[in-house]
Image 1 (cartoon, helix red, strand yellow):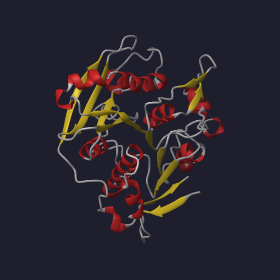
Image 2 (cartoon, rainbow, N blue to C red):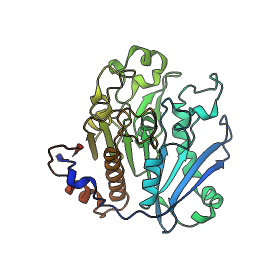
Image 3 (tube, rainbow, N blue to C red):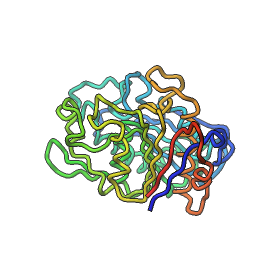
Image 4 (cartoon, rainbow, N blue to C red):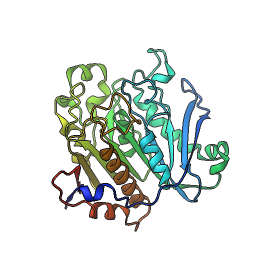
Length: 325
């Protein structure tokens, strides 16, 4: 059973989640990581007040900028989510340009396995993080955890949510699903492998070839732009980014943003040059709808997601549509 709605002009300025709170952001917090090329650096952002705060693990993408692919990126999302009651934890993955690792480092260039393992390492050390940021001590709800990721970060998040792939080095099925994660948001995430990939990606990033969403059972909101053709990655067109919704079992929701390209209006940073579709209203819609979705998934009975969807009505110039299964 599915349902759909449109993002209307009247809904664009409405915030159905809560009023924003001041945000505390601390970085870098360094977590010891034996066996990793370097220790794990994270940024932690949280509202200055409140207790029993849910957690969002935010995985950065790659892109062309030097610092967006690190704990310093994605401020439009991290700040908004933190201002609306979440603790947002952003790692600098080994694929980050800021680390300048030797290209021969195991797992290079994108370190797909290490990226997912970073998130498990963070969950294993939440007590360490609280001790390192005394303002957070005793304020985190370790039972309410979500993961979000943009682009390559969406691939990382999908693995944590239950997607599988075959390790191109040894041929084994890889299962990195993290049972402590209760919900997810995939933003412009990669889709299926096989003949949907460009020849260059199939050859150079062969781990993409075997992506399988059939076991991605964790509740997830997939966000895709209908102009995000990602021609350097796929021959399947913009629909490729909806694959995590189409090819996975429910419960899932899909937010399709009209005229949106890979930056989804500018989620990776404020006024970044690589955003080809800069649009403040589009970013606001992503902020509002993702926040509402995660709040309702992590707090059963919370009406934020339903209220956000109820606010989406037909409009002559809609920003997008939502469907669910």
